[in-house]
Image (cartoon, rainbow, N blue to C red; front, side, top):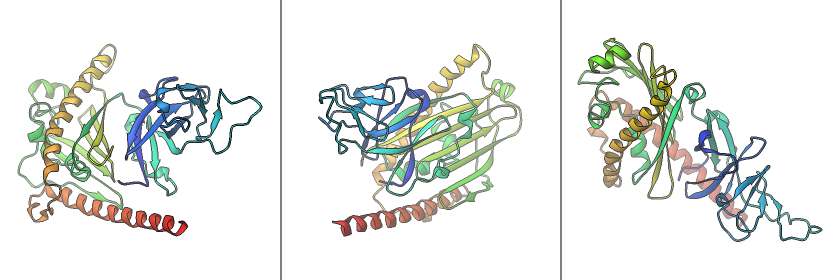
Length: 343
């Protein structure tokens, strides 16, 4: 599993006062909570007293309180209070649970997993979530992380996989050569291209009659992709964040944000309902193929089959993925060697 990375553990709307949120990421069970002062903390989801989940408890002031015997833990994992301990006895300093680096950005709670020092600049730029309305949904997929990441930035699959849900509203591609205008960095890639405007007459009245629709996209290793559709006066942005829950399951969070689509009261509430239902339908269509794709993940990839102009994106993605996974493997080996030398 790929550590020394930021992972989107929760969106801010998921956090409710006094209600901790339990999540499982990279095989680790964590609890997320927001204290009375507004600070967000992420701890190991385990009370070190009897090993029950702290996410079953509740927030009390600046601490999270275990619902089993009332033990309270600070945001740094130190035990603050043991109700059954005589008042004159201090809480032993050894009584603590593991805490994780957490950072709130773009209305998302990001958690750093790994031993390296976290770098906030590596959080994917999801600036639209700071100003646009958005909806989100989670899905568990029995698939391969790399294949899922690659599929979600594929430009051509929209025509076919989503022919019943999206149809022509986002535009379509045909057999022509496309300029993707790729910009590839060490750990991410971005690009833009144009799709043919083939929406219905009603969709064109609303979104515009331009012949081409500007489409931007991006991928940030190892867990985030972006599809950004620019209509004449409106905009639709889809983020997908994905990570391994365990060795067999990948969880994907899809976030859909929009600008000037069904805006104004009461259409705002209709927009949220419409976008959420449409987003869920789109992901369900993707999952059927993503889970089917996992069946051949152990075979040697056939890069010689990537022969169409659109495969430029896939080829660059493969290079980027390989480069960064090799760096991760070297980092993991160094950490293992350090642990061995200490032992």
